[in-house]
Length: 281
Image 1: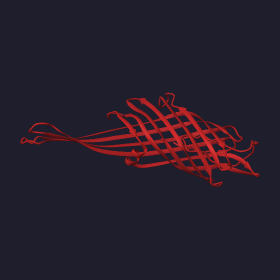
Image 2: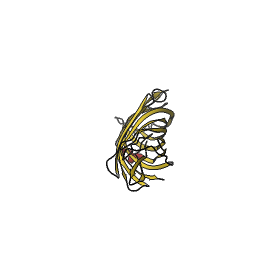
Image 3: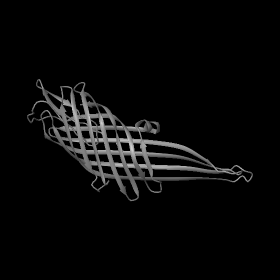
């Protein structure tokens, strides 16, 4: 799951305005208004806390845990979500920018199943499972502005760290319903964790529609076998500028991660709407 922000310089009436970009793992931005003349500027900063209403679909398997297929809508994720935190930060000066994105999510679920056998001594098997899953993603990247004007283009290169923790506890009990009174109970606990780093490259474009509205397009690809086999993401969004220091971002983001090494499988597609508020200083 990840987010991105950005700056673009736009000249309006002799003033330099700050514009921010969306939310994504390493960043991508497009900038601004009239064809720009290169000029010295101070460092500009933007922090964007955001939410990503993501659905999950794919397969997860680690260590001694059984393979689990996941197909959850965002409303399903909300039902089992314990905690989530997401935010993006960007620092920019002239053509160079440094981008950071953080996503953390913890979910847990529990369920009980019963099965009763036939016959006068009907045995009932009861199984209760508690499952927990944590995901942490942190991306850091450098961005270089290839062109300015009304539709600036940034090329991006960086690293994305991913850490996954999964655990499960299953309690099973067998009770005899007949005169023999057969019974038994057992608890089994399993856990697995994995972390890796993916290099990635990306492109970010921003187009000014009006003084306050911009359109954003972003894409990156990475992994290349160094971490995951392949990871890629794409984002389409829009930014609205309330003032020089406050903005709103909204759009749709898709991320795919395919990791299968050392007995750990994480083949997951994450997609959904995002929204965030940016603070510039």
